[in-house]
Image (cartoon, rainbow, N blue to C red; front, side):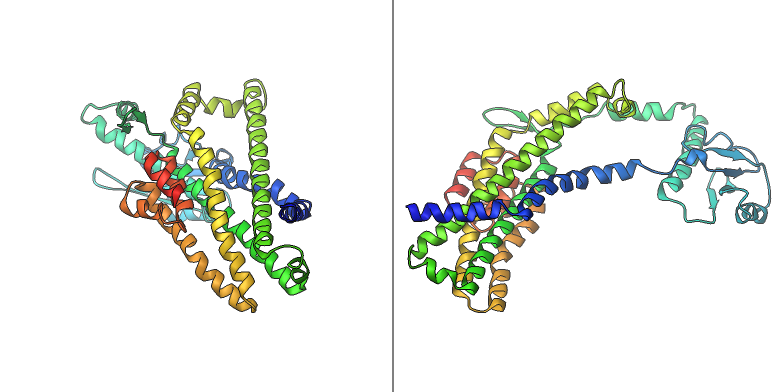
Length: 387
């Protein structure tokens, strides 16, 4: 037993003290935060179109006030020929010209002249403003006014809730599907990453012939078990560090959010209404994290031990590096297939395909983790754990 402990200690300490482990542990949460925050920031961050010099050419002046409620600053130029409007843009007197080509009861055609390719946001702003005015004018003929308020009220008056009926009635959360995909991909990444480390470790020791000396003082079974357990502890350490870092990041972010009411983040606090925050917390309360976290640890360890044992066996029995790579591709096919099936699990977690893939040992860590987010039956979870 002392030999097994020394192998575990060696595998754990030598890897946890490396610079790569420290960098990956610190940079991965930052990368994940950027992966989720940066797209949201880029979609809301755009050019200040209020500073752009945009003209409007409309013979009748019907669209003069169409852009009053938009972010665009548009000046009506009256009625000028089409070529003159284009020359104004070419001579850089105007950055863009909105030209109303046709506007009648049947069709409305608007063209936008510019020397540069406009963004989709700018074109959508122009289209939305014109559509809003045309719709309001056509509905006003029938005595219908305030179309936006009526539409918003009608949409807000309709709500659809999914209630899971069983021994206890529970409401579904809109965050179940993204969390299902996220946890499934995390399981896939961790299992593949740490299992590959076992294979690399065995391959390196075989090539350096150190393993021949080690086997003289410890059995091969204990040696392999020590490597697998040591790297498993390394993975758990890294996961715990990530949870602590993300928790601290969340606490700091919430502190700045509270401070934003009187600080520089006042704009963000105005966009997030208290009702929205309460709704988010209510949706999160429907997710059973007390079941998800232990299940995540179990299926990570189970999937890791399964694939790490197979990878270690491949590395131990293969003499050629190319043979090892080919066998590794074959072994990882079920894991890759589970990611493909995960998309079906996210949308229909109780389908036959999701059920059987959550029972098969080589795919169950990813698929069952995706089903648990949606509240998989207890008997299915126990059956998957047993196999």
